[in-house]
Image 1 (cartoon, rainbow, N blue to C red):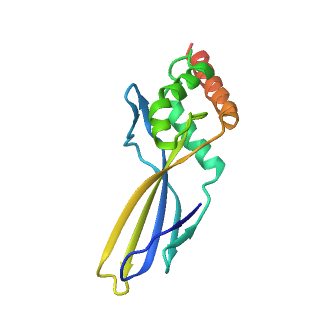
Image 2: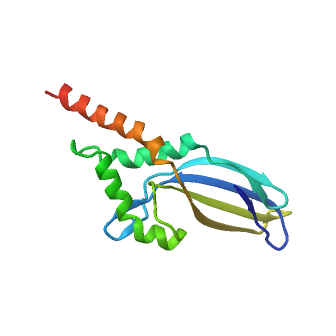
Length: 155
């Protein structure tokens, strides 16, 4: 990803990228206030940044989100598809296309400050990070296996 920012009088820019996930309910995507994971921290003199959010990190964020659903032994791929279906309208409004996976949310926080550090301004916005469903399938099966293992060891 490439991002470029400008602010009058700014001589130092910093970028933090937090990888988190949004909760899905009947209303669509909602903010999840669980702690996010800072995955990138960069500095720049001109406000230009180039970075990549690794597939593993995004997969881990979505898997972490899905763990909450694996308290129900019947939860599986069909239910994951149901979650994707619930996202359809808000996702389509944001991207103009139908969702094919559960995206992680990258929150970008950019700080610009002047030369003496007396004036600072912050801007934050979000970007969707898509994880192919094929990458999630092994994680879903592992979550299911862990649930079954815990269920059998509790007996």
